Length: 155
Image (cartoon, rainbow, N blue to C red; front, side, top):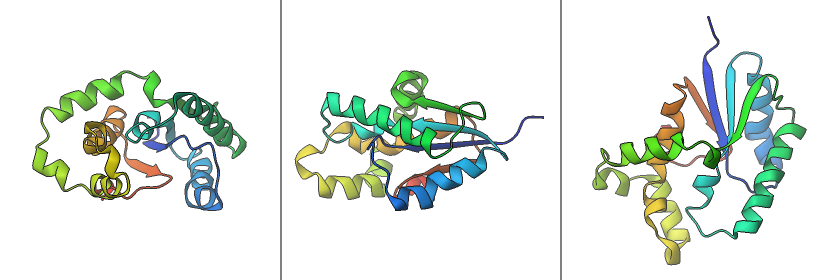
């Protein structure tokens, strides 16, 4: 019988803080022996606020390097870039078609980011929690961990 699946993701900042390491990445390394771990660089989540495309590509590669440098082992875990797996957006679209506007408007992720980025309130930001749900459901995970989570979907 296979091990339970854990899905974890981080936006590609390309920068490691002590909080990122202590709060998530160190635990991700430890989880590799107990679970089938899927670690994702969630670049689709990152573009819900404006990004310079060239900088985002660089940050994505830098984030991958950080995952590896912190001890995430590609022999033990699956590591990928979210936008390279079309099923994330496909399932997100289906879920969007079944998600009510009122439910999304109450999500903390939207409230938080729309207040901080008032000039960039877009549909992607509004449906951010739906993409998060798609990330989780695709892999039938039993646990989800992120570097920074303030969204209602994790509660």
